[in-house]
Length: 181
Image (cartoon, rainbow, N blue to C red; front, side, top):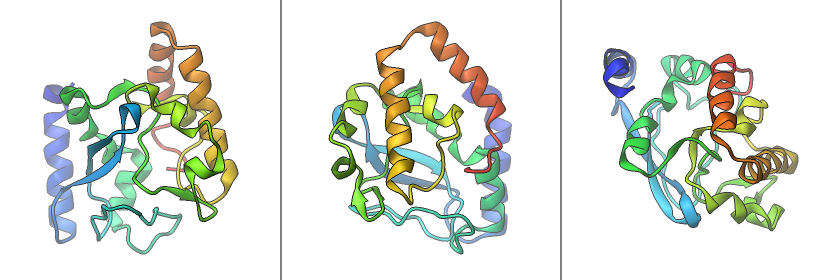
């Protein structure tokens, strides 16, 4: 896949470099398999490259998102460098999406909202997942934003199968452009 989309990756990187100062890629620490930290790659879509124990999540109409970055987010192109994470064995194509360190909803850490939160880390995180194809994407401003995702993640884990993964990949194509992206 990386070889096939190499021209697209180069075009996106060039677009970022031509439209805003800073690197085309950024790295961010997130929670991976067994809750261990992994470094996730993304195309930079904001004026800042935040990483640390607590990350300010992007919100709708966030002033930090660049004009070209908004396009990348709406089309999910900012996620493509995570294929390198898959190649490294840190992520899977399908699985619960990795969350940034210190992620919060309603000013509470995710694990304080639901004690089952850490169960989602029994698998490698994925580029896409059941929660994403169900529309549970974007900022987690309310506790329900997290609990809806978590419910989908735990359902995915309980019913994992290769045909289910193939179905999620196919359904992902339908939600690449999504209002919550």
